[in-house]
Image (cartoon, rainbow, N blue to C red):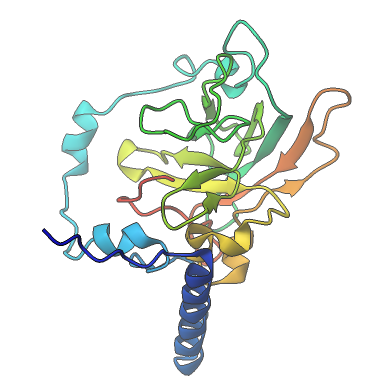
Amino acid sequence: MQRPAQQPELTQATISDEIADRHRAEGDAAASAARPLAAHPRRDFAPYRSTTLRHPTHELVRADPEEIELVSPAFGHTDVAAEEADLTIQHTGEPLGERIIVTGRILDGDGRPVRNQLIEIWQANASGRYVHKRDQHPAPLDPNFTGVGRIITGDDGSYRLTTIKPGAYPWKNHRNAWRPAHIHFSFFGSAFTQRLITQMYFPGDPLFALDPIYQSIVDPAARERLVATYDHDVSEPEWALGYRWDVVLTGPTSTWMEPEDADHA
C-alpha cells in the first residue's frame, strides 16, 4: 500500500503572509466602498485555520429567550463571593508567577456604566497551562492556581480582580504557533441569553503580529481595544503590578467579542 504524500508543513511565514493578504484585501474593500474597516473579524478568517472548518454557513436558529431563562442559573450578590475576584487566595498556598491587579469599567455604547454585571474570567497559569483535560501543553500545573473567578460590577460599572499574569502557550494552528498571554472575560448582560466573551491582552507582546486570532481583527484601533494599559496608580507597592482595561459592549467603538462557535483558545 502506497503511503499518502506528505503535506507541506504550515509555517509561521505562510500564516503571516496570509494575514497580510487578508488585511490588504479588507482595506481595499473598505476604501472602495468608502466605509471604515470592520471592527469585528470575518467568521472564516483563513489564517485561523479552524474557522474555515467550523464557521456557520446557515442562518442561526432562534430560540425563545423566555424558555431559556426558565432553566438558566440565577445569580446575585449573595451568590458571588468577594473572594472569587482574587484568584491568588483560592488554595492553601501562594500560586507561582507575577501577581497582577486588573481593573476597569464595563460601559454601553453611550458611555453609561453597566452595573450589576456578572463577569466570569478564566486563564492559563504562569506557565501557559490551563486546568483542563484537553490541555496537553507539557508545562507544569500549579496546585495553588485554578485560573477561574467571578465578579459583579459596581454601580459605576467598575470591576477589580487580582490574579497571576498568564503565560503564552502553543496551539496547533500551524508549526510553532503560540498564543499571546491573555485573560478570557465573559459578560452576561441582563440575562444569560446575552452572554458575550472576549480576551484581554497585555501591552507590548511580541506575539501580536504572529497570532491569527488577534490579527483576525483587521482594524488596528479595534485590536488595540483588547490590550490593557499599565497603570502605576493601580500597582500596589511590594505586592502587584496594575493594569487598566475598560470594555464597551455596544456601538462603533465596542470591544471585540468572540463568535458563539469559537473554541476560546
